Image 1 (cartoon, rainbow, N blue to C red):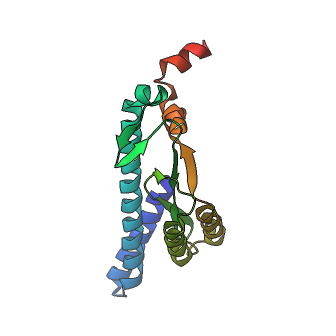
Image 2 (cartoon, rainbow, N blue to C red; image 1 turned 180 degrees about the vertical axis):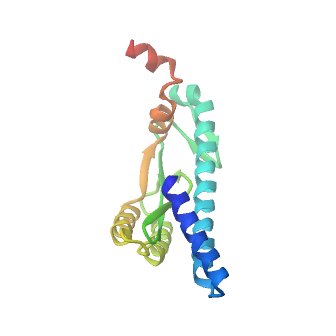
Image 3 (cartoon, rainbow, N blue to C red; image 1 turned 30 degrees about the vertical axis):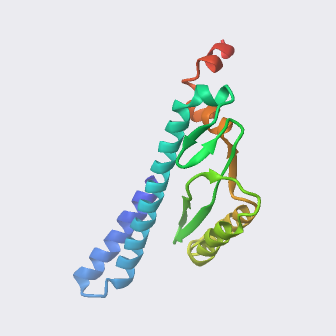
Length: 171
């Protein structure tokens, strides 16, 4: 978060400085607007993922007992595999990763993987470490994205402290 704020303030100062000198503010203002748009997209996607995780948490007992629950138009079981693809957007000195929402993993889901990889190829290399992030993200998307089971999501570190069975076994 600190690097994002630093980049935002530096770009804002360039825009203000150019405006005060009478120079064109189109280029730095465009970079600033695209940066804010990427941050907004990332925040909205992460918020949607958090809502999904909270819904899964509320169905934890049913899922662990082998039940099937409907969440975001998906029928999920404890062992269901979910996947998420990523777009990497480069901004001068750092990259912002924008994840897709979780969806059921399908072996031959090349269309969405290709779309996210194409967007990464267009936007990911615009930073100092962008080529590395671009190659890494394209390879990850082509291999099926970031995969995890429902079990991993509800029993992962984010929810571990609220799980009485886990805390009892640690003592």
